Structure formats: C-alpha cells, structure tokens
Amino acid sequence: MDLENMFKKKVVPARTDISQAGNKPEVPEGLLRKCNKCGKAIIAEEAKEQNYICPKCGGYFRIPAYRRIELLADEDSFEEWDIELDTDNPLGFKGYPEKLESLRKKTGLREAVVTGHIRIEGMEAAVGVCDGQFLMASMGRAVGEKITRLVERAEKESLPVVLFTCSGGARMQEGMVSLMQMAKTSAALKRHSDAGNLSVNVLTDPTTGGVTASFAMLGDIILAEPKALIGFAGPRVIEQTIRQKLPKGFQRSEFLLEHGFVDRIVERHSLRETLARILKLHSRNESKKIQELPKEEKRKIQKKAVRLRDIPAWERVQLSRKADRPSGNDYIQALFPDFIELHGDRCYGDDKAIAGGIAHFHGMPVTVIAQTKGNTTKENIERNFGMPAPEGYRKALRLMKQAEKFHRPVICFVDTPGAFCGLEAEERGQGEAIARNLYEMSSLQTPILSVVVGEGGSGGALALAAADEVWMLENAVYSILSPEGFASILWKDSGRAEEAARLMKMTSGDLLEQHMVEEVIPEPEELNVQTLGSVTEQLEIKISAFLEEYTSLNMEALLDRRYQRFRGM
Image (tube, rainbow, N blue to C red; front, top):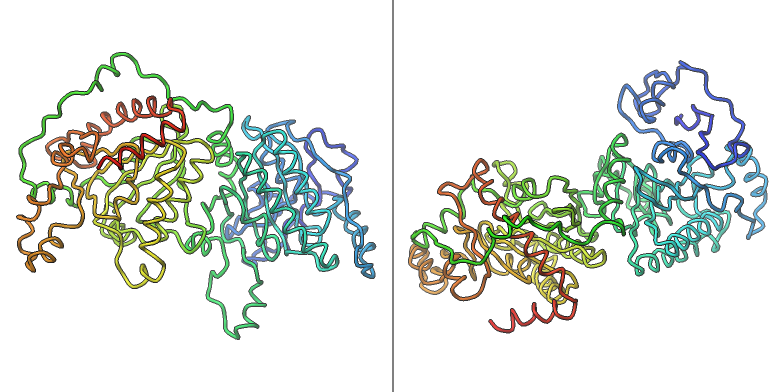
C-alpha cells in the first residue's frame, strides 16, 4: 500500500478553491500501516512528516500532486491552471466514463496532472505534477493537453518549466489519441526550448512507457528521486520478451545515472533547495555581467613578463604527473563553491574522467568542465586516470551547447594524459567524439576559456581546449603525445623520453613563446591541495578579467577572433 492511500486529505495550495480539494477524510494520527517496501509496520503520520519516506527502510512513497506542490511552493504562491480540463471517450470504450467519474470522486482530481504557476524560494516557474492516484497518471488527451498548455503559456510568459513525472505511460483506453500526445508534448517543449527557456524534469517512481518516450526525457536538466523505476518497456514485458531475469537495479534511477540519461539523483529533503538553485542559475533576471573588480585587483592583472624558474622540460613533465598535484575537481571546489554537477551524455554513459556542471563566478552564471584524475588510488581508477572515453567528450559538448543556449561562458580545466585508447572507446567513436567537440567549439556562441592545469595530452586535451584563450600553469605540459610515445615512435626507443621532452617544446614557456597559449600562471615550489590557494587566487583575478573582456564582445567579433586565433597558427 502506498502512502497516497494512507493519507486521504489533499492539501490545497492558496488560490485553489477549497471545494476542489476532495472529500476524503485524513487518516487518524498514529494509525499503523504496513510499508509495502520493507514489510514493517509504520506510523503513517510519522512517514508523512518525513516527506512520505518510510522511517524504517527509507523507501519512497508516492506523493499526491497537491501535497508535492505544497512541499515545493512558497506560501500562497501556487496558482492552478486549466483546472476544469478533463478527457472524453474517443474509442467509446465501455465503462471508461464511469471509471473516470469514480476516480474524480475518490481523488478529488479532474485528471492525472495538476498544472500551474509556482514560486520556489522566490524563483518563478510553471509546474506540472503527475498524480499516480488517477489511472497511474497515464497520459490521455487531457493530460497531454494540460502539459502542452502549460508549456505554451510558459513560453509566452518566458517561464521555466518544472515537470514531475509519475506514469504508467500512454492511456490504453484512448488509443491513438493517447499516442499522439507524445508528439504534441514533445513539440511544445521544443518550441519552449528554442525560445531560450529552461525545462527541468523530476522523474519519480514509476516513469514508464509513452511518458518516458516523450516529455519526461526532454528536460535541459533531468533529476530523479532515488530508486525510481524509469524505463520505456516495463520490467515484466522485457523479461517475457528476452526470457531472462533482469539484474538487480535495472531501470532504476541509479541505472539511468550510470548510463548517462539523468543529471542527478536528488534526495527528497533537498529537492526544493536544488530546484531553487537551478532556477536561480537560469533566471533571466540573473546578471550576465561579471562583478567588476576593485581597482587594486585590476592592477594585479596588468600584462607583464612571466618569470619562470629554470627547470628542465623532463622535470616539468614529472611535476605535471605528480600524484598529489591538484586536478580538475580541486579547481572546481576552490573557485566555484556553489557548483552543481550534471551527469551523462544522454546517449550511453557518464564518464567520471570529466566532471561538468553549472555555477556562479563572481555573480555570473558559468558552465564549468574539468578533466579530473582523482586524489586517491580508488578515485584514479574510477576516473580512469583522467583519460576520457567518447561519452566524456559528448557529456562535455552537451553541457557546452546548454551553456550556449543560456548564454553562459564556458570554463574548462584540462588535465589528461590523453583520450582513452581502448577497444570499447573505438567501438563508441572516440575519434568522432573529439572531432565533434572541435567542430562545435569553433563556433560556440559564448566565450570559452581553457586552463591546462596538469598534463595536456594530444587530441584528448585539445577537445576541451579549442577556446578563445588557453592558459597553462607553470609546470603544466601540453603536447602532441607523451615524450615516451614520441621517442618510441620516432626513435624506436622509449628510453629517450627525456631527450624527447626537450625537443617537443611542450612546456608552458615554450608554448607561450610560440603563441600557442596566452597566459602562464606561476606555481609555488610545491603545488598540492594545501598550496593551491596561491594559484586559484591568481586564476580568480585573471578569469574575472577574461569574462569582463569577452562577454563585452558582440557575437560576430567573438567568433571571428576565435577563428583567427587558430587560423594564425
């Protein structure tokens, strides 16, 4: 039994007529129920107070739509739209009208989705919440129409859309009329997106069938509740088709996160805060300008000759590879404290060798992407020692295209020995993924800055460094391949790597002299997480100046300048 059947009282937000709230009595306080997940007896009121989560096993119960809205909305902020809209019986299906009428009386809902205007921590949005009490929130004509009207109105009013999905899919009783709602809702979301608006989807248990194959998976950002069932075909249908038992966790939120289709799994208690942060980062009222630097800070960034220590090239190679050298995530944590990581390429997987997401930098929303090796042996293995697979580059490109849509500058941190060269990487198109990044970054309509903080290995590094400017840390290196590989290929002797490092001119000083990079950032004698502040302090000042300069350019000038940078090499 789900808690939606335990808690019969519908909480009606302000501006919604109390007469429309249904007439089911509230479950008496302290009434015991059996959790359908762990089988233990629980006090219904206690679970309700804990956001409809079992106090014994932590399992999530479904939340009625109005209760969900109450948990999200600022006080007196919800205004319901299209409340009287309901469905008809296009197939003349026997007993269907009676079933609908019975559900309306039982639930107090007119249909399986509630839509309207909401404020979440002061941020305005158009919201749609599916309610599984009503025919398992299957999508018929009325559900599709309400969602389409919601999205159309949001486009007209330049509002972001937040959709909570919970559905068994298309509504069988309405036949092809139901199927066509998939195309209709998808088309509405495309128009909303093309107008530069944000959509955020929250997938709850279950999200299946025609809803998964339409509006549920089309958000700019897709969140999911833990362990929610999400898939196109139901598990039983799949098992019957392939005649095999499905693995544990198949089609759950965690499975989709691993396979690149969900940005984040968010615990229910932090969902409101997470949505508010996302909405704020995409607010049209949010400043698109960097906060101006104080005059004394501006004086610090005046161009001057960089004095580099006299260190042999091979020693710099060794320093760039040191196990305790800060990598991408360390720079994110130091420079972007409100960073929200987003996952997945929406095609195959989530490559942990590349971390990416959104944040503020001195008041300006930015997209941040970093190749990262990890700080422990376990993290090194999880992140494949910073060697991205094709899905890593496709995740990065997805986030860059999203940055372009919302006019956010892109800041990349490069640190990789090179792109992963393995059988599976070639099967999934490693070369195409890198080429596509270079192709798209050349004309990405937003400023791009790349900073080589460790190793910059070959095309695997360049795929995040086709930027307006490229900077290097003093002991970073950037080259066509590793010195060992260079010596092995040209001299058939990898033992001549030290000689190769000198010849390849791969250090920051060499590349600054060749005009391959624009800035070199001095390092302390020992660069590690404890001394990173001396580097990030410089980066903070210089990134501010970069953003101030490049965001002031018109798009034609920005793109021509970027093209000429590479054309002149």
